[in-house]
Length: 194
Image 1 (cartoon, rainbow, N blue to C red):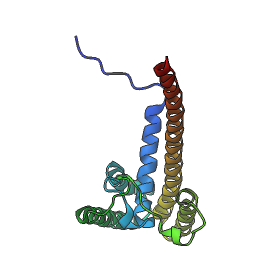
Image 2: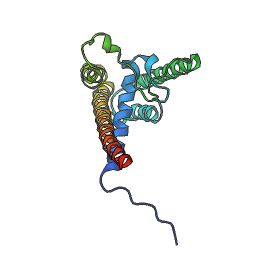
Image 3: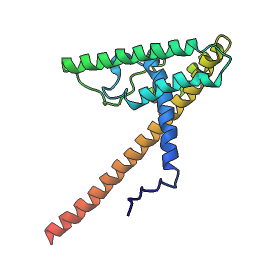
Image 4: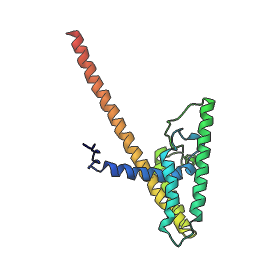
């Protein structure tokens, strides 16, 4: 009897995971330029950076009559920025400096200009808007690069929103666990008195 492969989930989680991977990969291709390279987590640039390079190289396919060279230059600069970030993370680890979360996507360089805004507001609203405006402006010079930046800005916004939802769910889980522990502790104390 041949072994059967499990059926893919029918609730859409698989498709959602693919969408989030693409959004995070698009975001990654911007974050390496928008965030301080010394602040990235040691494990941030993994699968999403590889998918990001693939997206950059694949994107000109949609613009057959346009010049793809600016996209290839962008891919090269992205690769160089990833190398700088990896080198800084290795240097930080070698020095024994305190580590951020290993998947941290860096501190926004724009935080210096938007001091009264939260980091998540800068990452999820300010950066996507500025990148989209830059993309719209660049479409006059190179249509593929400009359109890519606009789409990547949407990916950046979706990625930040997804991270916020995950953080909120984890905070709710911690709150629930805290209340459960209080209730169980009270029950345990009553049992000890009996």
